[in-house]
Length: 230
Image 1 (cartoon, one colour):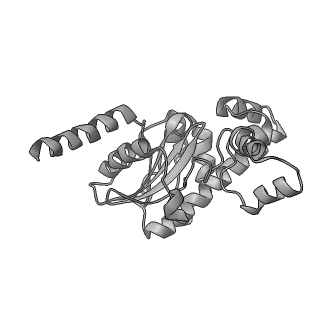
Image 2: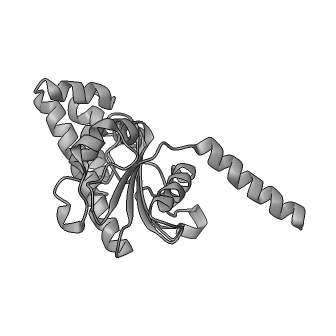
């Protein structure tokens, strides 16, 4: 059934993860580094990369799986879909719309723009606090899982609109991971330095702006070069 229908883990944001993981590895001294990439925008994904090869990703057959996103639920008990259909009387199209367009941060607090959510958070809005807490909990969970998958981690790289610009999310997503050698320096983080990890930390924490256009051009050149050699 899986082969016939093409059901497999495709992964998404691949060009971004490829570019950022390679740049992050340079901060650790070379291409053999183990890297966790967190691409955080309205869509969001995580990857575990070992020596340039992605060994795990948070997104599956569609972009719905994984992290909490702007309007997508992320990881969900599959039986919820059956429950919504049988008990809630929802059609497949209604469930699709609910999980992809009305869930995530939007479903938790009514806003899918992280800037608006963090502004509400600073004003003491409890719904915004819940949304950010859930968002960062899911991030922290994936970081821990990918640490286990890789065995050791050299760099954690934040990218995407939220990852590059929200010091609050970076700080809260990695809070409590000091035992794993993951600590964010508050001053560097607030400035948005390339390296925001604390001095002497075992795991580097970096902010790396993605460049998907460059990565597409690089991969295209590689394909063209191989074709010309053939």
